[in-house]
Image (cartoon, rainbow, N blue to C red; front, side):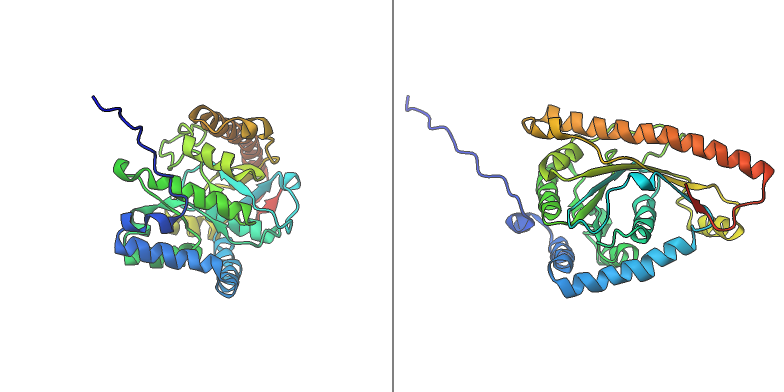
Length: 296
């Protein structure tokens, strides 16, 4: 019987260029165009201007009477030139967009990358334009939910890690998808893929908890106009010290531990948010509605 020769594993793809043959034509188009918007400084600066002076202003217009920012003093200084990872819970489609609008006001002026499901946003032309309308083409890279294409997510997270090392910031949800339960303090299990990204990137991670938004845009606008909608509270945490876990070997166990630790920090911030919300409700019973919103 002939000796069997062990088959060499082909190297894992690290960039979408390496897997373009596994993407549909419309996915290739979307990936190329959105990536280019970060690679060329003039395009990037134009879209950043749009985010700051159109997108962020519109978001603040429909949330400013309800917003409360907590823990701002815990944030690292802006303009450091270092990529940051912003990690939060996920209740609505707008969690990261609203948070980013107020991060602009706090001096964090770079475009932030947001991983997004590939379905619709990357496999249709309309998804391409919605990406532009909602985020000025910052929803990148695509994340593939189909099991047979799950290996493409390795490429997506490698691209994100590379972007962070180049000074770009990223907004992630450790839960991976929206928590649709009625209790905003009940979370989905964190995804180990997020832990892998954090392990690869080796960048400061800032957790925050956000609560009070709704997916109903009309209801959100009307509540802000009246000033009587639910308070929108964002509680920022200290940058997390993940040195020990990041220095551990890159295994599934390490990635799960990182994701769980980040989610635990977000859960701790939710306790602080609940106390602030109770305080605001008590104030509402004794004073007129806050006409402008405020920072704590």
